[in-house]
Image (tube, rainbow, N blue to C red; front, side, top):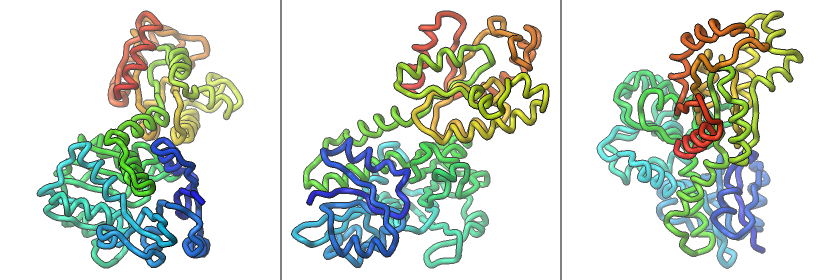
Length: 414
């Protein structure tokens, strides 16, 4: 029997199988279990080694013969290995989270830190923060509980916090549009770390970026803890750079390339070429909208008006944005709703294809730009919105091949 895998309640969108099979030469199974099934699974011991995720990091401890002192102190186990019929428990979340902070040069020593949530992951996070010398650590929880304070108290007394770490599942797919805390009142905030990795950038991470703070999602932690788990599983060391190699590999595979810009700037043409080069699927939001409304955009505008169209556009953008490994060409007006951009940034990098207004097309079924004068007027009106939305800008006033190369380079470096 050589069985490796992950146990938890809901595992449909876990990246762990992909990560483990990149790091090691074994098959790694996703094993969703109810509480009743967990009991049978742990007693039967039909596995060589497993990882444990929500909500069983504490539940598995009574089944173990021995627990590593660090994991015992935390009261949470995420790695279980069977040796000679006995079960040994460890916590590699600690090492994964510490790697994420150190690799991104997030300073903890002497800082006031808030930890959102008090589940298994929070225990590893708090242990790291203590070991890295945090001056104050406060656990924030949504209801009255031991060793924690409420969000209300947090907003009243702790808005001077310098670092916030989210260990709750709030903001995780499929509830990607939510955030566990409002960052507005936190005027001293320097960094935010979120253990959620799907989407690649949660709403909390995006809010922190908009505030000008350093912000990181949980994918590096996930790969980091997996690397340390593999070392325990196989009792051998992996190369130091294996976390970074797998992380970059995953980001290249999972991240969407999002193209914004005026109608006629070359989004669709360049998007199709980029998708081919990157091995990603090309999606045109306008084409998806046309499928949904069953008519041309010009006819829909004429019949129902722009407001109705924008509502449909936002629904389509939201659905597409939760997917991975796409090149997305958006409609020219997608930037009119900031919420669209937040959705697109969750799993993507937004690149603005800038084109001289004199080179942009008018008419030809474009309801908002029937002529060149309308193009110039609309360009001027939307310029601040494109500027605010773009993470990178490339110019497309000439050679198509050059523009494509600029897009690919910008995406790789983002």
